[in-house]
Image (cartoon, rainbow, N blue to C red):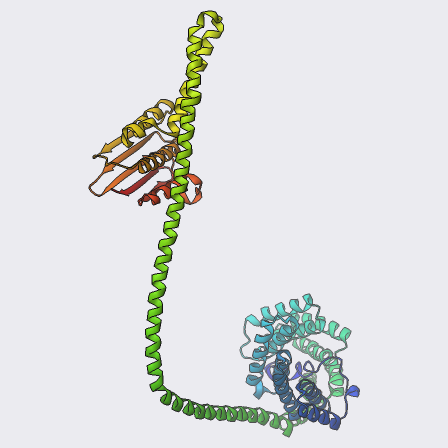
Length: 571
């Protein structure tokens, strides 16, 4: 019984959904007036108004003649005018109307699907949700006519119904519910079909959509026929028939009379069954064997033939143009070879000059960086030397005088004051010497780098629990004061960092002299660190000083396993 629904749904549900809402037949101008407007607008190249008038003309034909070729011809013209005016929304809206119109005829389903998919792709891209909903409904109407029905169709229709409700589109929501009723009927699930048909009918009555009311009444009749309640089915069919007859929907009238004949036959009323079958045959012949229906199929084929003809002309024109271009290329080839050779030579010269300029610029930048770094380091060391001299020659001497004075007059001081005062003076003198030595190590300027490092480690061992070990291999070459101070400061910074942050048990400093280089290694067995998370001035100063000396620094640290820093300097 329900195999015939595959054709019926495509014809029935889309027939009136393609009619824009709000247009009534009484509001339309006459046929001659519309055609005159289209010709006038097209002559003035006012393609936007020509497109709208053609769309109205297609509706005019549809309202007066039903499913006919003139409507399709008007819609195709409207699509052409929208394309000329650059109105993409109007252009793809006509794709949607043409695709929907083709679903009336089972033999045009493939063409319908092509137009609808093109429209859906565009409206998705511009996020026009109401048009996306409309396209999905038309495509869903085609899919539920396929055999077998895609399993995903139920989910897609439910999602479309929810989307229609969210965007407050009751007309599309009712249509989605009707398609669900159709699909459940085809899969022989009458209870679900009745549920959605009743919901769709309620909205259709509220929206006063006669075709949708008639369609839902028809499906309610089918659900009653499933349960062998034929009298109830006939009542629904008759109510649906009156509405379909008033709007001259031949496809709906054909299906209603065919199902009515089945019910009358089950009830034994063969006279009415025979009369209904005669009506079914008449409506079928009127629709499928009419010249209008055949001409629509020919219209699409003619349109495709015209398109192919235009494409052929374009290809021929392109070939002619290509021949002209080829001739010009042959003529200009000889000149081009000479020109290309000249350009290649000039280009190579430009690249060579550009590379030389880049190398010179990098060298100049490097020299400026080195000069800036040298000035900064000399300024730092000069300031440190000045402060060290001031401490030693100024504050240090004054503290020594005070100490000698106190020692000379100890008998005059009370006993409880004498001891603490001497202690304070000793500590002040010691601290002054330490600060002065730290700013400008006496051993470095007097004895050289290695003795200065030994003195530094000895002092660090006195004030820290961490064991610091110095290992020296090879004969240290003579270094300039500047280089000695820089190396001393780098090693001092590395040792201080390890003592402060590594939480190590031991630190090993190795100085190795080879034939070509000076290697300095500082290793600890502390907690390690991630260098990317420590980008402070200390590490930056170390790197910049070693760069200035022309050396390299290699950092290696593993969390929980300690840190090692290797410095390599040219000898």
